[in-house]
Image 1 (cartoon, one colour):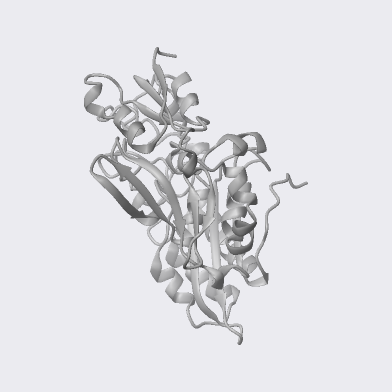
Image 2 (image 1 turned 180 degrees about the vertical axis):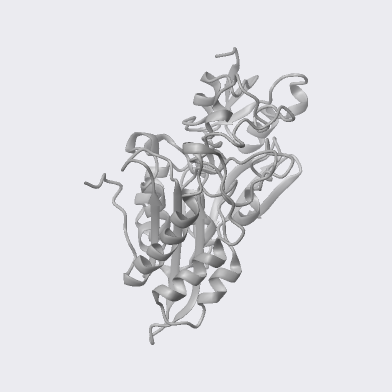
Length: 349
């Protein structure tokens, strides 16, 4: 690990001033740190070499969860994942989010990881973590070692010739389906970013996972009212072992069912298939006004995955993810029709 300085900030403006890029010419950017569950790993692997860590855990105002006047909910960026998942209002109003968070990591990691940090975690691409091989995400312009190689965890949608990495967060997939809004602050003021615009596809700048500037600090995440989806939602995560594993494919599904059983509206987001949580409005609109059923759900899954392309070669390819994702979407929607699946976070036999 490289040398770095450490300082604690007491308010957002002080924290932002301490990471101002211009203060560290020629050095890796200073970084905010809260739980540090991903950042410290990246530092130990020599993937990131920040000049300074700015500890933001003292920003107590942003560590809580509070209801909003319109029926929504405000999640502080510093609230821990475990606290968020088990908060009574999250459990009652947004069981989809609770299930998604509890499907990720381990209880120990969830106790430490913050909501803001969860959104900002980096890809788990093997080549990104190996500082001895080229990686455009780690060293822009050096090339992508993943293309044509071992790619079980990699993208089938939205990839570019520069990067095929996927975003690993479970929480972000549920937030995409719930249409959360991320609120950030910088020296230029505050701004609100719809979650669909927060993460980005790799294009020719895969080193940038989000649309945040380096000196922008996430303050809180607002959930709009979503009572219509509370009774029928499901987060389905397909992974290679039952706990503490990142998804091969995940699905956040939420349905608003009318008294006649027909679908009034639907939300579907896919995880671990692209550089960001993947939604396609036309797939959701296909369900609107229809009676739930396997044939309909298969059509929606096909629409959602239109244009999917496999990566890799030999035994390490990921062509299996396309049919896997289709079946996962159908199963998640069927689970949602039966009623909200409330994950306990416990390992299943």
